[in-house]
Image (cartoon, rainbow, N blue to C red; front, side, top):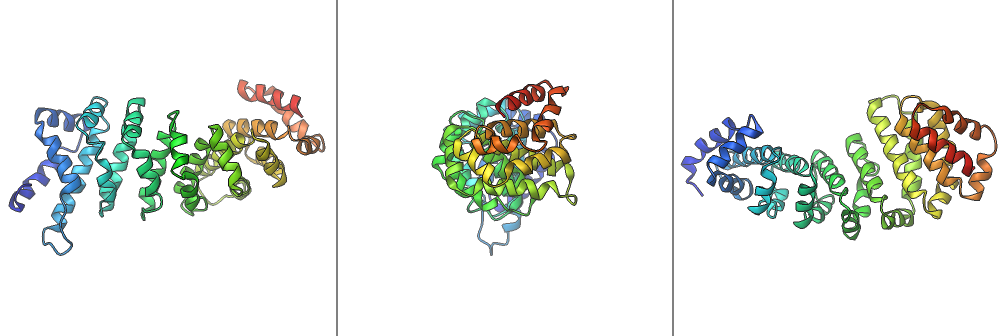
Length: 332
């Protein structure tokens, strides 16, 4: 730990090297002790609130965390971060009182997770368990949103959903299922959809008892939303239908969707937004096909013009939509 009188040149050094990820990495590789120095500053360089140097120490941690973020953008650095046990100790920075430090660290981990190697390293070092817990402790919605994005990236790994379920991720996600911040809401919805891909995830989502009803209400709410950014509104609707499509594979999921008027609401979505989003159309038609296996739902779908609407998509230029429309028609 350097004397405080030498701190200021270090902050100047960091700031001058943060313009380009490759340049930061090359500089650090040519000066290998700099790696340890940066991570020491990022995780341990703290003072008491009354310390006259506190703001400079805080700034140094912010700059060090910016270096970490830049390192994580470089493919070659991922293995070094793991070998040097920086990923093993990264959880220490989750507790930093300065929001910008936490933001930089989570952004860095998002870059780090953009490869199978990165995700495996995060799982190996129990980062998933740690950040799921942080959903109940973190106060900043900006940081919460980054945590949700990172969790969703890690959930791409085969074993990750099972790990997340053991850590009560469904209970923690529920804290944000009605969040007014649309970024947080969108990423909460995406996490539910990712969890519901695996069989145990589907089962726990359905058995929770309120999630399906909540998602159907969101379809109705955001279908009539004309105040917020429509691109984001569409992403939220796609995320909701992806989740419902997954849980509708289970019998109880089919029943809950039918009993909460999910079929009627999804056809309203097709009529109002189907022309603008092919993924939304595909999700809805597949979900309707799943729900149609429930006898009451199939009876309903044979009334009115439901079947005629499905048949319209038999002529879709999108091959996936065309194929799914024919499958759904056959089920009905």
